[in-house]
Amino acid sequence: MKNLTIFCDFDGTITTQDNIIHIMKKFNPPEWESIKDNILAQNISIEEGVRKMFSLLPSSLKDEVISYVLKEAQIREGFGSFVVFTKKYNIQLYIVSGGIDFFVKPLLEPYGPFEDIYCNIADFSEDTIKIIFPFGCDETCPSQGCGCCKPSIMRNRLPKDATSIVIGDSITDLEAAKLADIVIARDFLVEKCEELRLPYEKYESFHDVITIIETRLGVKS
Ligand SMILES: [Zn+2]
Image (cartoon, rainbow, N blue to C red; front, side):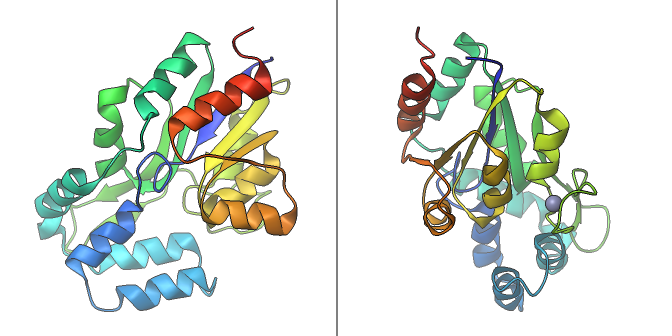
């Protein structure tokens, strides 16, 4: 097993739900649902949609938003064991998330330290919440609006002789999944893999993920 490198999604994968949707449902700014529908219908890019949704919230809600999302978020079962597993076998783990730093980083902190977390950043210095996208699309990415562009990060980070694993749950993981040697999927990503006949392994907990990696790659041997 060579240079095993994992690219793991955050919302709906490490956490059981999508934290951005959670925040929007709770604070319910007018128009957020139509923006969400436009993202899903691919009328606007993920980057544009996320930027627009957060611009509906005043920065004065900062503390309330952060404490709400941290209180409500649940980490998927087995994640702690999974992190220990990757360290034990010297597997490179990248967290690649379309989520925002103010919830991604604190929620991961008890399991860290992590060298590599890729996510978007919130700026609360203006009237409304501004989202910054430090990991945008490279020239090769056809979508040019991913926000946090997972395939670009993979192209940039993956050593040539590495075996890559993508773990995810949603449409935002699909382009990365297409580049991966092994796809570990749940929920909507399973449907898309079926539709595109992309081989995948199915998981519900991170205990499943550990078993899949052990079995597929003979990590134990
Ligand atoms: Zn992209």
